Image (cartoon, rainbow, N blue to C red; front, side):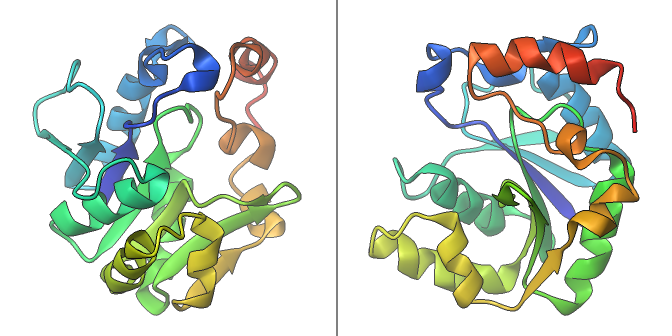
Length: 196
């Protein structure tokens, strides 16, 4: 079994401070979509940060242990609180990540500390699997205030998931779409009917 964590603790400054997990996509909130998908694969689902509103039964909410450290602090909290060694981590604003993709990433984690998708846009550390072996390197980086997620690549065993591998699960642009700005939220409409 595996754990999953939705990182919901960001300030969403580019989105006017709104709770991006509460945004509606295809008639449902992103958070509801994510929790439902994660629950198909993982028996331990966490939400890191946020205000705890809209929690479903069986979903645990945890706070950052080291505060104001961005996604790195959220991943650290997730790994610390997780019941399992492998933790699939996803940003709260990614509505289209599928159960099949998550299962594949988790399968690859048996031989790596970090399973990290890569597309033409670069690495996607907020749709990745982190093993418990990442805790100490992350804690060291937090202590040194080295908060770029990509920096962790040099500290642990990494399995990069290529664009060709991602293609098997659908259009990577759709799978890994996120909502950083109101314009990106509006742009999701173009992806909603584009399933593959």
